Image (cartoon, rainbow, N blue to C red; front, side):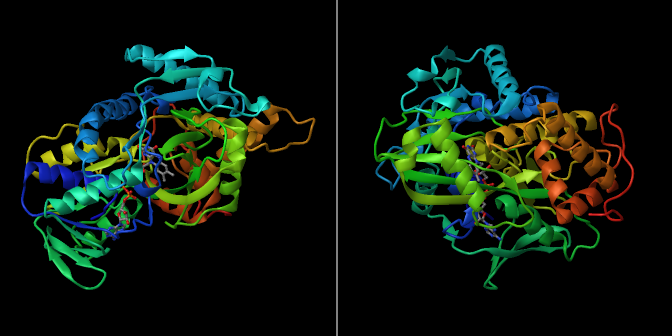
Length: 491
Ligand SMILES: Cc1cc2nc3c(=O)[nH]c(=O)nc-3n(C[C@H](O)[C@H](O)[C@H](O)COP(=O)(O)OP(=O)(O)OC[C@H]3O[C@@H](n4cnc5c(N)ncnc54)[C@H](O)[C@@H]3O)c2cc1C
């Protein structure tokens, strides 16, 4: 179930292995799906933050990206001949990561962490003069003072890759059903198929839930009639993102991915060459209660204004051809959910957050192995019914939250009273975070984006607090449990 990058790469992998009969169910338009909106940067080191290598769990997650990276040359060679777009699927072969002063010191520490990681893993990189980056012509007050060239991190045309996968799996005789699944059907605790929204049944011995941000609610349907097996998976949240594809009308085009480090709760500002004189500009990230394909006016302003300021002034004259909105599948602990569910024959692959397109071929290989009863190639720590992975203390979480808010504050040009200092703005956000933990009554330390989400969503806060209170005792030793609960609270 699901025809995004994860479902489609898995289908393709199963074709290659010639195993059984495979049916992919998912709406043809993939509306609001993450994959169709992705910039599809094949980013590994460009994605590094101070958190990427800080714990064993994050390091294992990071190394998934490195392993995935190695698969892409073969993927592109296979898919290129099935691509219906008439343009190369690989749109960039290199990246430039810029350090400008807009995103506060979060950029500094993430930029430094990226360089440390490149040295540790002995990958190719060099520091270059930002003025030498083709196409890079920011406004002077937003110019970068440092830039790193990553000669092996490029990007693909996400929509082209999906179209090529569609062609390839159809040509192999696989059935693609342009529908949505209403519920998973099981008898006892064994899966037996799925029921479509139009009432038809598809029988299946094995069912894989690869429905992105929709996966949690779909997986839950397998447990509705199954009183013995309670569904107690960690919450997932849609990370609504906006991006646009625009036609360049003048000036020097970008020939590589040009991006900032990850910053301010999101994946950094970036431009990706899109072929035929087009460029992809992305991307925002907003954790929301409901999946939707809407775009906030604030996000349009954000992307348009900051692309002009921080990437190229000539962007103002670009003609926007595609408005892209998609929902990233974000888990409570930020790690993927990959593995068998407690209904026999039912498998889950999701939770890939901001680099799922890049990781999809590797995950497909792993899941195909497991479906065939072979040992998988990735660590079993991402099993779907696991407890949230602990990577930080509550004090650390509050510090991170403050840093991300400061980055967002300065990037968006927020104005404080002239006499107000940065330390005072920090204190404001720190107090807000402390109050939020106090209301939640949890002892698990949240990532900055999740803390931002629960701070603004009563629904989300209740759902997450309820889950975490059932699973107390997950915190790092130095974390302080906090008191009063949100359900009885003031929000
Ligand atoms: C703006 C943006 C930019 C991004 N940039 C990058 C990037 O540069 N690099 C990178 O690696 N990743 C990027 N990502 C993240 C990446 O897109 C995701 O991690 C990944 O694509 C998730 O793939 P998926 O197949 O799990 O989910 P999705 O792509 O969301 O696919 C799920 C599919 O399931 C279908 N579906 C839903 N309900 C049902 C149902 N009931 N029955 C059947 N089908 C159903 C949906 O229609 C959808 O097509 C970005 C995401 C966004 C939103």
